[in-house]
Image (cartoon, rainbow, N blue to C red; front, top):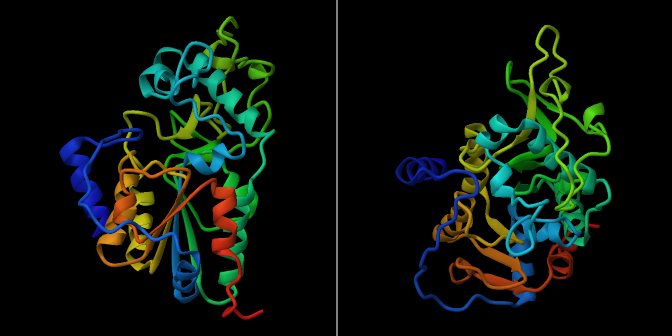
Length: 304
């Protein structure tokens, strides 16, 4: 079972959010880029799993905070997106996430998000299913209209109470009055140093605990319930798409190769090849917003 394999790897290698590995894949025939052939597979599929990564959101202009130039002030994400950073300086971490929340208000779902959402809605009327398994925390899939979404790394727009554990959606802008106008990314900007009692607090009666972003930070494990749901979907899928992901962040990097290993067609949509490309039946190179819409459009065999 896939989740058992994930658990095994997690115990053996202490896998957690953001952990990357380089792995070798056996030499296989180069994946096909024949769209007509892929469309025949698509027309037959009853349960489609779509695994998405940062490449999808990047086409909407969402900053990744990874690689060269991926800084907020003088920090990269791995400096702030940790339990230790939040414990040491919750004001600074909340400034970072407040900035990211506010940036997302100016971003819109792109053609890839919309194609996935339209496909999900259309196929559901035919008794077919589409599930989105995403590593992204920006909720652009939801805003595009997708409904069946498994968020591996949580959401920018959910909070979790450090005291009572309540997880709650929160789209308030700003999330608390003290953060209004804060979060400027300029390297010369001064830290706000907001008192902890003025940071986002739990509204549950009698609690008032400190809230944190409900995202999986570096050094934290993924939610076991989410992984169980992912396992169920991957076990029953008869077509898998890997869209805009580098296939190097575990455990998500394991999902599509394990689906491919049981003979299920897997199609990769990315701007370049990845370490997992040679394991897949199809590879379509280019921006996801360009390559994905024609792949997921209504097939001639579908009822009108």
